[in-house]
Structures are given as structure tokens and as C-alpha cells.
Amino acid sequence: MSSRANPKVVVLMGGPSAERDVSLSSGTECAAALRETGYDVIEVDAGPDLAARLTDISPDVVFNALHGRWGEDGCVQGLLEWMKIPYTHSGVMASAVTMDKQRTKDVYSAHGLPFVHSVIATSAEVQAAHVLKPPYVVKPFNEGSSVGIYIVAEDTNCPPKLAADMPEQVMVETYAPGRELTTTVLGDRALTVTDIIVDGWYDYHAKYAEGGSRHVVPADIPTDIFDACMDYAVRAHRVLGCRGLTRTDFRWDEARGLDGLILLETNTQPGMTPTSLAPEQAAKMGISFPDMCRWIVEDASCDR
Image (cartoon, rainbow, N blue to C red; front, side, top):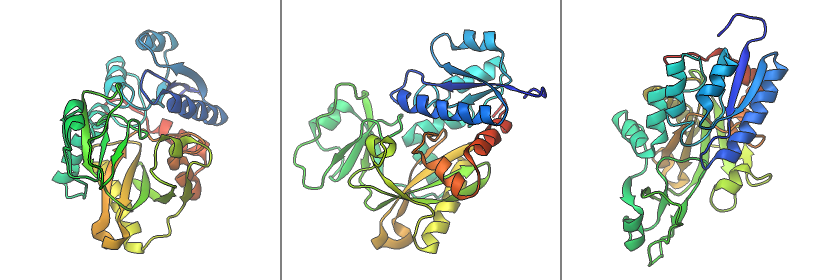
């Protein structure tokens, strides 16, 4: 980053993914926080002219507040590497692998991290017959924010009817019962564990609507489960090759104790909205939102 008094930061937001609205909210919040800490901030809605926009602006650093495909899967990261502009969060390889939920599980498996069984199938196969024994979950393997989630209950006779806009290939995952837990990693440090309490499934509405869920931070859970979440989140961050900020999500079946704790996924660019989990955890650990955003910018680099 430039050594000038007020470094110029472009906050990338929006973009073409299914998570566009969440990204716009994240980007707006981050831009305001960075201005508060003294940066010269320019907000950019990432579109096909992104390279030209960045050339014209000539930023010292890019704060990547994009979510979903194109912005979180290595594509934008590759562009920024090509243009030699320092950027935040994970690099090309970690972003690409982590955005692919099945490849993420391959890495978890190789390093002894617990996860739930899943397969990749075509939408046609999923709608023709049960690919796994119910209960199971059907979802895109390369989207976030619980976009396009279908839960097939144990007593369901017919396979699910998927929306027309579901991708050709989807993930079919054995349903993991239990509580929703999550842990944020900042740099090489796990912050804390949140217990997410919601009526029903932790879907898009529960994540982003005011009052959609209740967060217990730090989670009131047994010490061994809490410590395992902290350990697993840091290990996932490292073995996936992530940088900066990540958040790893868990399901915990209380009846099975530690054996009931599994990793669902690792998010390389967690939400930064007013209801998001990572900023809430940081605040609980005494890190203000502006300070968190400043740390992320100071961590920016190329060759990530």
C-alpha cells in the first residue's frame, strides 16, 4: 500500500452474483467505516468494465466486499493480481477452492477435519429420484448466503422439484441435525463462537432480515465444543490457504458430544452487514468495526 497520508481504497461491492444485495450492504458499511478511519474511499459496483475503472482510479488497495461467484471465487482476485493492485481477503487459489463446497470438503478430509457426506449430481438426477437417503439437503456447490437451499425431510417420498434457475450441477448433502455454530478467524486468531438460534432453517431471510435470528455470543456450550470450534476454524483457515478474514460454520448434534460437531463450510469473505456474524464477534472481542476494516486493509497485498 502507498505510504501517502490518506491511502486511496476502492471498496468493491455489488457485482453480478446471486448475493449482490448482501454485497452492496457489506460494501456500504465497510466504506463508511474506512472513511471514519481516514482513508480516501471510492465505492465501485463491480461490472464488466472493472479493469478500466480500476485503471482510471489507480487505487492503493482494493477492499473486496463482493460475495458469491466472480467476486469470491478467484476471478476478481486473478484480475487484481494481474493488475498488481494489493487486495484484501484470500488469494486466487484459496478463494477458488473454498467457493467450491465439495473441494473444500476434500481439503477438510485430507487434514482430518470432520464434515458431512455429500455428492455432486445433476439437477435432473436430483429431481428424478432420491440421490441420497432422506433426510438430505440440496444446494448449489458454489454459492453462499444459503442461496437455493432445499431440505428434503426424512419421511419425504418424492424427490424435490428444483427452481428453474438452479445450476445444472448441485450438491446433495446428508442432513446434519443440531445447532448452528460459527467462528471467525482474523489473521491467525479465532475470535469466539456464536450460537445462532432460529426458528426453522438458517436461510437467507434468517441471515439478513432484522430479527431473523438471535445470536448468543459467546456461545453457551460445553468447553470442549467451544474449544474445538476455535481450533477447527483456525485449522480450516490455514489448510485452505486463506488470508485475512474468514468464517467457518458448524453444525453440532448435542446428543453425540464432540463426535456430533462437523464443519459445513469456510467463507473467505464473510458478510459485513449490520446483522452479520463476523463484525459482531469482533465487537465482542473489543475490536470495533472501523478497526476491523482498517486491519483488513493493512493486511492487503498481492501474491496472496
